[in-house]
Image 1 (cartoon, rainbow, N blue to C red):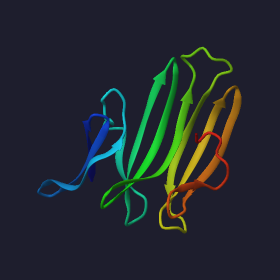
Image 2 (cartoon, one colour):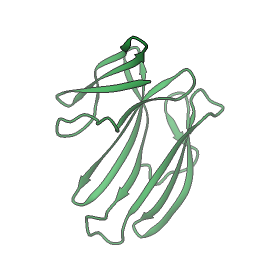
Image 3 (cartoon, helix red, strand yellow):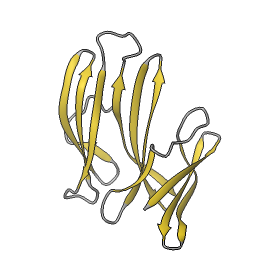
Image 4 (cartoon, rainbow, N blue to C red):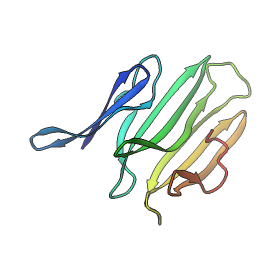
Length: 162
């Protein structure tokens, strides 16, 4: 079991990854000033950061967070690969948009289900199912992102990725 903690320093975040052992928690990795994340001096909450497996040998930091602006809610998902000098950004996508509190018509209210699946490449494929309504139009499609050696790229155009 891993636990990820973030410590704010101005707007940069330091990341500390701990592993639970029989004798207690042991620091696995640390990255000082690793990335710019969060708003109003706040780092990610416990349900917004996780250390996940991208393959049997590789783990990544997954950050999911959203914001509300004038009644419009948006949430994004990012993956960062730890390496010896810090974190490398691999993936970013918008996960949900909702205009419910904004009074904007036609309405927008769509969401994304995400799954990681083994593929033929070094890292797992990322499968997204997007569904709901975008500006009054129905949205319901699947897209797969594959690692190309530098970052994740979609197998076809993904208009909701932003």
